[in-house]
Length: 201
Image (spheres, rainbow, N blue to C red):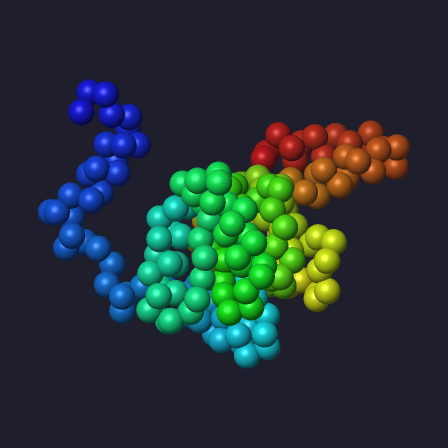
């Protein structure tokens, strides 16, 4: 135990048999507002022949989404930080070449860089990153040369939750960057206001 990291100890404890009673039941998982929305959205996408990328920052959320997709009987693939580097391109090629696979589950960071997934036209951000550029990189997996459809981006945000604050903060960061790059068009008052906003972030 002395040689285990905090993360390894956490993973060991989470799987302890005395915690089994606290696991979410399949029925309770289906009650999530986000999953209720996603169930309808995936049904619509399947009917329309559209394919979906679902991003989350959290491995545990990807685990829940994977179990939920199995309950619904939807075909899917998964790529996250644990996916071996040699297997990543194989999974990407498999998804791009097979119209039978509806969903690709990806962790925001592992699936955010250098990946081309133009066979999908719907991007779902299950949770929002504090750094809006991580989410933008995830969105860009579909916006590549070879994309023939309009790409739809869906951000799932729980009403009256901290997610609303994270979204607002991310939007302010993007606006601040846009305003700062406007450069010479800003006067001293505008610049002072922008810097004040930056300090609040």
